[in-house]
Image (tube, rainbow, N blue to C red; front, side, top):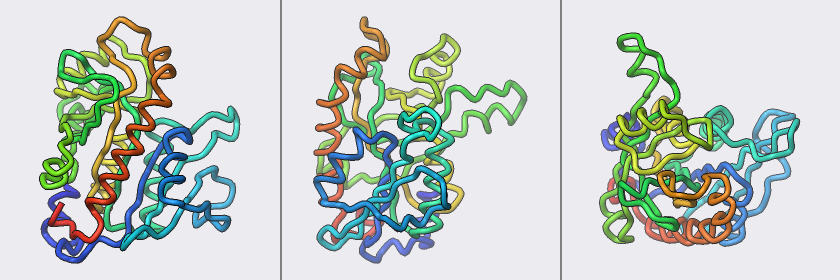
Length: 258
């Protein structure tokens, strides 16, 4: 696990964190963070020619911040959301930028029955998939792909953030099978990127934390897409503030102090 690797010394847990990688899926979510930290777009991207991935970077206090946004899909022109883009861009960014810590920040759906409300900010304790159904022994566990996020007890306590499990799938809506899998994952929040970022972070042994802001109530009475769009701007502002607080807490601390 990435958390275990970091705590065992591979990520130099006692050295102050200096290089942070923020992975955000949508431009609407990314732009306030870019503005807040006065990040600038890299005109000479470290990524392969032709990919739409965008790197913003800058210095904030003692931290080098890289924010990676997967960009607009070349064919459709919409944000490159979902697990494939987020996994690819996370892998490429780790290779190119060698971060000490990854922050996957973004919006998510939440379950009212499990204590989520619109505007809530959650730190994910665990990430898993709910739409990779492989009903063969052991392959079923691979499909779920459950992974622990890096534990940040001091950060959670200091910022008074909610902690919950996160379930990831490539659809905004939810089928009955998805709902059963999300319930089995014991997840309070649902997104389209987190578990993919967790998979890559685990492979490459980089500690990763997940900051998710609830835009819509999945078990509420409003259509998901309608509620998501209605609340996106306000919740993105709340996410921006949460990311700022997380970054300020991280500044000057080592991995082991989080």
